[in-house]
Image (cartoon, rainbow, N blue to C red):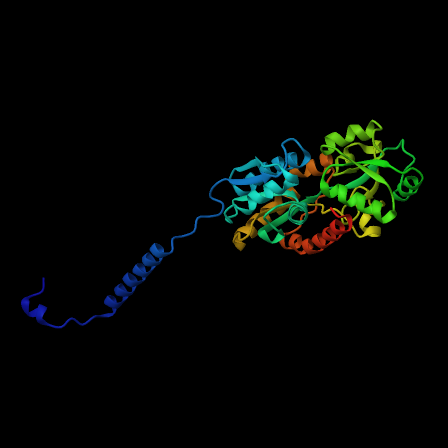
Length: 329
């Protein structure tokens, strides 16, 4: 212990003192920073939810359920599938718009939801209300018929229609009806739309001879030579029918074909990038998902980034608005 005389002497800090003080201050600063700005938890730290905007059991629902299993392995969290059907996907779109923009809830479905639904349906959203996380494939939409008909090409369908007014075709939604009747109007033809409930309703009617031709979202590819593709309804030609022209080549009209993944507007950029990379890996490399696309659905492996999807939307919307105004839908 110091003597009384020692205590009265002034304290002169030495090098060891300053070194100790520096360490103490540094620790205090780090502790304070830790209290005011807690470390962020890794994303995702809880289950994700993917919304299917259609009824259970269809091609899209099947595809998304396989995707969800693969995505769960990729991100290390469960991926819960919810079906929220209605209004051609618009019900699911409205639900997604109103979710927190945290990256935990997103929708997988047709790009017609953000492009066609705001034009045709009474919905409270536009294409700008979503964050686009990518596109995992394309629906293979086509005008089709059967080999027993005297029609093997789109040109032959048009020529046959001029001699036989009143041909019937299957439509499955408002956009397929719009596009096919738009072509009929450009050619001055009398085509009559017959509503069918999805591919499951269309196929037996067409194969049974109750229709002259039909719109298909891709189910025709499972039937091989029992069905003939007359034209692609996609913006470009179909992967399985590269020699068959697209309607867009002659009529400047098409049906949006991308299967998009989208969430509410405002998801943080780092989470968008994480999900985008996860979707790219799964859609390109997961054996079960790739097999489903290539062997069962016969859809192409064609991943697009969210930015690439978003860049395509204005042209699609412009085209659909033009067709709607022309047809008075």
